[in-house]
Image 1 (spheres, rainbow, N blue to C red):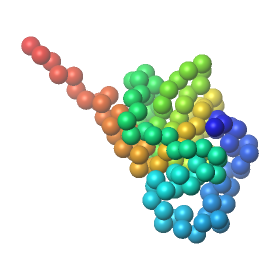
Image 2: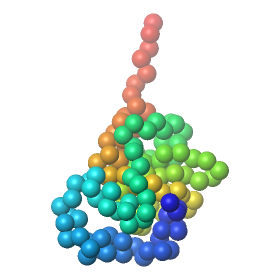
Image 3: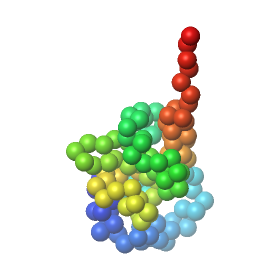
Amino acid sequence: MGNAADIQRRFSPGDVLLELRRLSPKLATMSSNERAIFICAQFGASPFNVKEVEVPEEVLRMVSLQVCRGIRCLPISFKDGRLTLCVADPTNQTISMVGSKLEIMIASQDDIMAAIDRLYGLMEAPTEIIG
């Protein structure tokens, strides 16, 4: 799958979702998971499974909890100066505020939000002191 810049060069902002809505009037009534599968099919990809993914804390700290919740994204990894970001809507222009060198993965919004709560919640959990 291409990075955010590649996707945005091929599709102007919102064009994919507008086309998806034109192709399927039921898109608005689809579940988050069905919508992710449908959007992935348009990009020739498969949804990324974020349900059990483990993300290093240093990668999570690259994108604030507020940004993740606001644009519904989850940082997955950082390698060779490129951040892998999981999103529900790859055409969302605000993704670029996270960074310019992005690898985009797609997952359902519900799964992304649950992973954000799980992973960022672990970061904020108090450390138990045994003494």
